[in-house]
Length: 204
Image (cartoon, rainbow, N blue to C red):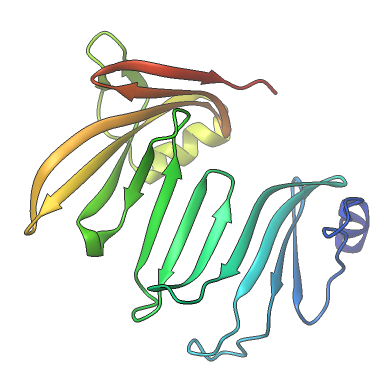
């Protein structure tokens, strides 16, 4: 069964029609296969240079959820992982630390970088109150989120940008709200100055 799924999931798009090998991992799943490509194998040594340079999901012959890893020179970061509007920069001097950036529809950027005092606080709730412009109900646990994802139920994710100065919270601003139906993103609403600013809806 695994070989049949992998054969069906081989992409017809140039650059994504890779087969399982020493540097290419295949993980079959319900959508086809998840593929990741290494520049070299770590072979158990976490300090080696081995790194995933390309990862993507295959649904039939179409690649999606593509993440590329690019090497950086003359920078405080050694690598950056790029996936759509999201970027993760890895610090050269302390690889366990990273800087995450996510573009908003208007062009503004959310940042999570603990070394620079920036944090994105994500709050999962079943509803969002658009009259009060705040999450409605209790913050959900990971277990509850997974249950709603698996059952196809609606829930919302609120994104707050937090900024710390000398270890103390100095600012907290609601930046974006996402509405999901199960695992499917249905709507993104950017919030600016306490009100909806830019709304993007998604179809199947």
